[in-house]
Amino acid sequence: MPVKTVTVFCGSRSGENPQWVSVASACGRSLAAHGLALVYGGGCNGLMGAVARAAMESKGQATGVIPESLLAIEPAMQGLTELLVVDSMHTRKSIMAERADAFLVLPGGIGTYEEFFEMWTWNQIGLHDKPIVLLNAFDFYTPLLQFLRQSVDHGFLNPKHHDHLKVATTVDQAIDFLLHA
Ligand code: AMP
Image (tube, rainbow, N blue to C red; front, side, top):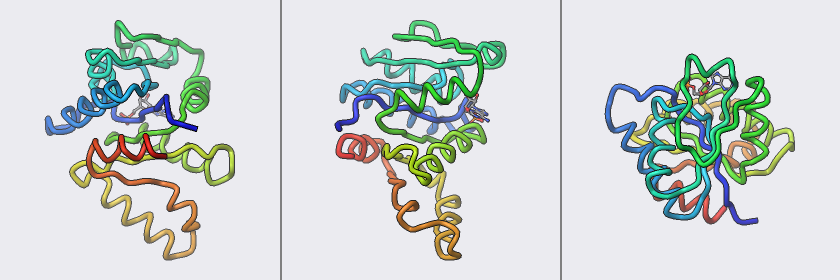
């Protein structure tokens, strides 16, 4: 089944170096240019805001899903194609998971890691078989990838599940993985 909707997990902060916002904006533009609809956490700050803003500016589709309780901490983006204000973090995550044809993970903090690992573990236990692409821009995730390789070597992570994760080093490669998943 072709990928049409991509759920993106990424930082609610921008990071120190402007390169992170550039990468997120490039992702938003490229998703829109390839006709891929974006689903994300709905915030206007950080990389989350950058990816959605770029997608909207490029005439793409962007759906935000945010729990009401988070609105005060993570203000919602105005002008999205669709903004779903939901009752809990669990509802947010299940909508983001259900709507996705594939997941794309950009640099971020512990919220990003939690969402990424949850979707990967759901794959491991057979709850979905949706592609998961990690964008290792500027080697951000290289230490984590080394640790995951070590987890395979120690026999804690099945190579088959390890290999479900596709690692891209550029935005173009990430979009290519999504289009040919
Ligand atoms: P961060 O990567 O920490 O900047 O967070 C990115 C996004 O993940 C934000 O929209 C957070 O609200 C969200 N987030 C934070 N903690 C969790 C969690 N436990 N489960 C799901 N999403 C979370």
